[in-house]
Figure 1 (spheres, rainbow, N blue to C red):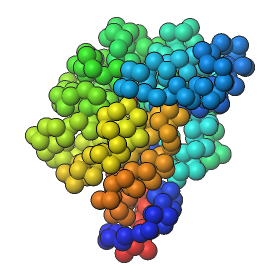
Figure 2 (figure 1 turned 135 degrees about the vertical axis):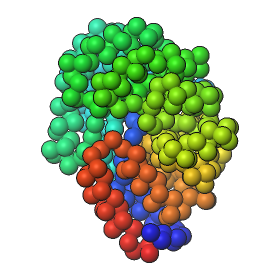
Figure 3 (figure 1 turned 180 degrees about the vertical axis):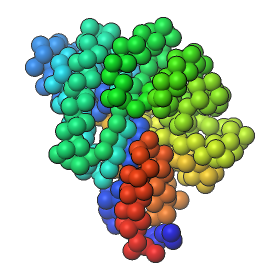
Length: 347
Ligand code: HPA
Ligand code: ZN
């Protein structure tokens, strides 16, 4: 496909919004908007450390990953009932459809909730009902990926896996998130080996704040199929060649990387270099309620900041997202056909 056109910003923004695409790196707890936090706090009688939405929003000034995680886990404390999880997920699914997403693979952090006494079942019932409603009412395809919190122990991850098994058909895979530094992937090698035996799909956050070596050990020790973030892989030329050769997708989150100071400015982001190095990069929102926008906002701001990104790169990123997803081959082929039709006019 020849998609060499150069478009003015508004026309490019339209293409970016309407092109069919998948989102592969979104934490559902990170889609919890301050307004919904306050509504759920009221509904559930939970006291918050901030008097109003504005003061909570003002606290969203992060210096690194941990400074974000502290406030992100505090925000999740208002989630108690099945309906809370349903409302949160439905709000994300509506935003996803508005941004032209046809398929979303959505992380959830059960340990954040079970540690507060919320039953695993409550989380899963709310999320599952939302997923089914989004399919039926919005025509959106989606799937859940259970994330283990890497600052907790291997034993805790094994316990969570046990609790999750009765719900096996409601999630397609497992991931690894939370504080990266000091918690290398290999800490969870045995848990991931067990998940692999169970036929679960495997992904892990690596190379966000942590070194390129963590990307390598996520591949070698956890045998993951995608790397979440992975932007620091570029520090290791041999690793970059391997990622390109093995076509390992990276779920890159540009606005997140700036908010958490992985890059000082969006114009410093290495997405253009990742693509130029032949890597299967995708664009994602990570925690859109905290980082300044949903998927479309990530696309528009990143394309505005990086002049190397044009129509061709829009096509490649959308196509990568579909191909890197865990959806069935027939669904992927259908979405790629729609994508090609969308870009037909740029031949
Ligand atoms: N990194 C690690 N853990 C997370 C993130 C992230 O960007 N978002 C939610 N949990
Ligand atoms: Zn993430």
